[in-house]
Length: 275
Image (cartoon, rainbow, N blue to C red; front, side):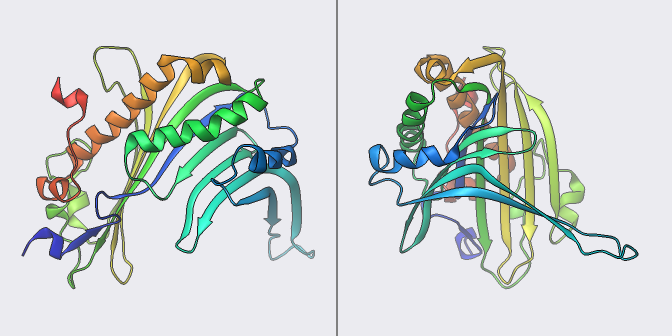
């Protein structure tokens, strides 16, 4: 039987379930409610919902403490724009204030091609940059989540999905029916420059009714010093480094996946591998 009789990627043309570009800010986002004006002014026809993010924390008391659990609520922790239709959520743009970091992230659950995704990202982030030229960017990340569904009756045949001689998975990974591994590392995808990414690679086989194989790969690049957001978006270096992160993701998948899987999702080699 062909591998396509056993496994189904999340999309007919590829396996990308979600793609995310994030920029990390030096300072918190002030007055998240003020971003609502962008929905009519800049995002009409793109996003149809605007929400303010609030945070609720529950502090559970030990059993021997005679008091109820504590609740804390923090309002205006950020904002979220959502594009949603009858098929579900398609795009999300959000600004988030967390305890130890602040970021702007753009998510697509309707990925088709890299250039279209990047162009859509720019069309969403540039209006924010024009309104908030004070934003200083410390780092960016590119995150891909690839998913496959195992549609055959038996447990997933991992050796038909992942190469045994790849650079990331130990032999013990193949000895389990539903393995999970989390790897953190740094890498320089191209020897032609000194760009170094910090990577987190999570690979898991999830035991659902039809098992899900998930590959989550996040690459982060830290700038040597903060850059104002408009200057960053106007520079070739941003496009160069984020394109390099995209190619790096392809390198990782090409190293991980068998030829059968790569052919099924039409995974091509990156410029790094063609050098």
